[in-house]
Length: 337
Ligand code: ADE
Ligand code: ZN
Image (cartoon, rainbow, N blue to C red; front, side):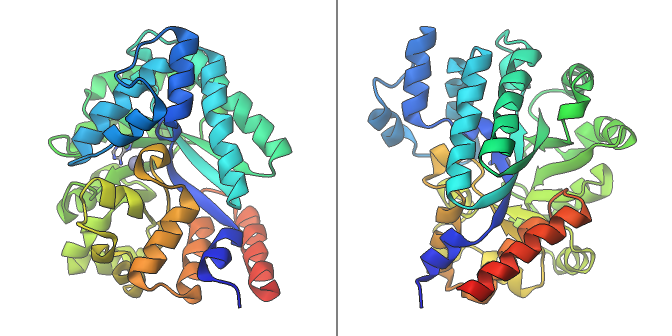
C-alpha cells in the first residue's frame, strides 16, 4: 500500500483558487527584476523567502502587490503563467481556474492587453503540450472603488472570449460585498461565472452577504461560515462550493496551526469543499502540499482525499461532460492503486 502522500500526488485534481501573481517564485521575481531593471527590497531569493512572514492578510497583500512591479512585458506574464502550469501539471492538476488581478498592473501603466495576451499564450500552450485545461477569472480588487472596478470590467469586455469569470479579492475587512453589487449584477447579465473571496478574514456574515447580494456560484475560502449553523446547512444543501486554501490560512493566521484548521469539520458537515493553493510562492506549497499538510494534521484518509478531488471537478465551471470525463479519471486512478 502506497503512502497517502503518493496517493495524493497521483490523484487527478482541479485547482479552483489560484492567483497567478501569487505563483511568482522569488527566483523568478529576482530574474525578472534584473531583466527589467526594477530594484527590489531583497538582494536574492533566499532573503525574499525569509521575509515572507505574515501577521494577517494585509501584511501579505502589501508584499504581494509590491512584487508585481517586476511584471512588465507580455513575455513576463507568459513566463509567470507557464511556470505555474508546468508545476501544476507535474502535480496531476488536470484543470485550473486561474485568477488574475489586472488592476494591480494597469495602475502601474501596464496595458491590459500585455497582461492578458501573455497569460493566454501560456494557457494555450499548456492546453496542447501539458494536457491541462484552464479557465481565466478576472478579479476585481475590493480595496478600490466599484467605479474603478467598472473601468477594468469595460476593458475586459474586448477580451471576453478569453475570460470565463469575474472574481473579487484583496482586503475583505472594510470592503463589504455590497460595494460591488452593481458590478456583479452586470457580470451576471453578461453571462460570466461569478466567484468572490469571503469568510477569510471576514465573518460568516460576510459569506452570507456575498451569497445574498452578489449571487456568486462559489465562495473563495469561506472557512468562517462554520460560525453560523443555518448558513452551513444552506451551503451544504445547495452544495455551494467553498475553495479552501489550508496553507494560506495558516500562513495568514486565519488558524493558529494546521491542526486547528476546520477543513475536516467542513467535510463532515457535507460542505462541497475543495483544496487549493491560493498564492503558492508565498505560502510554502502548491496544491499537493496543501492536501498533504492538511491530511497529516487533520488525519484525513483516502476517502476524504477522493471526496476533495471529486469536489474539485464538480465545483468547477466545466461542462457536465468534461466534469464526467475527469471524474472517470479519478475512478480509474482509484481502481488501479
Ligand atoms: N489576493 C491574493 N491572495 C489573496 C487572498 N488570500 N485573499 C484576498 N485576496 C488575495
Ligand atoms: Zn485567494
